[in-house]
Length: 103
Image (tube, rainbow, N blue to C red; front, side):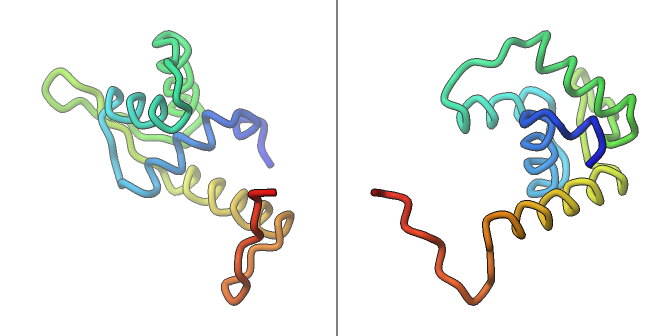
């Protein structure tokens, strides 16, 4: 796994963009804050976006006054590689029921 993917926030951002195709920065930030159930520091969040763009994993375009982000082919490939790795670790199998984690 490449170094850029060591951050859970980076992985989660890429997963959101994989699911939605593209998102405005503020929408992505709001969705992550809802998922984490906590506020994300704006400087940290926008730094994460900039790092992913600089490393070639996200594309950024301007729409009006908002920046819109989408996964690049490299970002999608890295996300899917991580998903395959994670699936092997937790034993995800399409035919198998997920474990009951409520004990």
